[in-house]
Length: 92
Image (cartoon, rainbow, N blue to C red):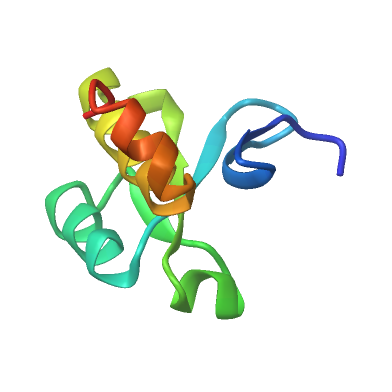
């Protein structure tokens, strides 16, 4: 779809816009709400049903690296197979 995506177990957990100005992390709705509350200028729901289910866009220009890392780690854990999560307990 003309933009990079990141996969674990063959499933997308995050992607980047073609111009790299924003990214998307597949969060759970409660995780999404946390990021929307704590960083409302950086995180916003993806449009339509994707956003209703937790897909969250991230405005990268002003985002702090630690916050993006937290969102990506959550998205990875949400998507990765349970066995891989157990093996990779180092991923926060």
